[in-house]
Image (cartoon, rainbow, N blue to C red; front, side):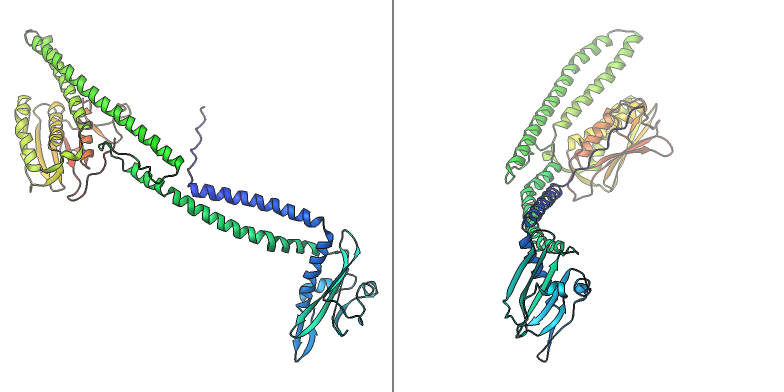
Length: 464
């Protein structure tokens, strides 16, 4: 049992790819720097003790208040687990410069570490009790509240609640994560804006490529303003497209030359067969006529491939249909069929007259050749605008699974036909921005309709 091929990966915008990688590498850089910061701080417990002292005294000072010139203190709730319970290992004292104690959470264990009350304290002091980890120190600093100064002192014996980690988190947030995040936002925004600006000509080139018209020989991508690498790609696309046009031109020339070269010997062979009075010769002449018709279709296809819209002009569909019916009437009646033309209100379209005549001629010949004996053909126009060829013959045979690879899905081909005539008609209509509509006629037969774009709409690029 064959394994199913993996589903193709969806392409992502370059902006998203670059943004994702910038964020990823920035996150890796931030993580690496965070580790470096932690290692650096970890090597200096004295500095960590100072930072913890500043943080704890600042939070304790948040409980100070001044009312009518009187100082008061209330222990903040989030510090109660450290400075509101005995034997926590954290001790605090708040006093004025004159020695008046506003708050004290201190026992005999910590009294010896604080400065004496009668001592005029400095604005900041710290003493290491035991070097290294866990942090064990005492210190204090002066805090101003209104016009009054207060000394907030703490003693930490072992840092049992690991308050040092909150210090490290604040340091990382304030001095690393926040600045780097702002830098990342600026760099990311500037990078994405630069990419969008640089890709603007690329997006324009993609729009040009979508509108490439094979019938315009100088179609190419504009390389002006593109980044060098993208310009090289656009240049390669232009050169590849030029080589494709050369191959198409060579194919058209080859097809046309072969078709013309074959028609001459076919005519000679037919003349020789007409001299032979034998049923086999008559059958061979019929087969030669089929081959000559096929070669004529190849010539018509080569002419179609070489056509462009420079030859477009207003065409009256009624007049064109009437001319085609008149020109092909002898051919139709010689084959035992009949033909008539139904005019409408004279719709006009912008078209290439010779190609449009080829399309209608193909439909009529197709009806004669494959519609069955004594088929009646009706050609007419409508205000769609459109032009139709309808017959009461054998109709269309839906394409089956065994149909030739060239038959497009949903298309129909006449019973017994090769389908090249209808493919030529489809291409002619694609060149005119329209399409070929085929269906069964009522009560029997087939109806093929050339549907043109509404008046005022420009033809679209044909699908090749």
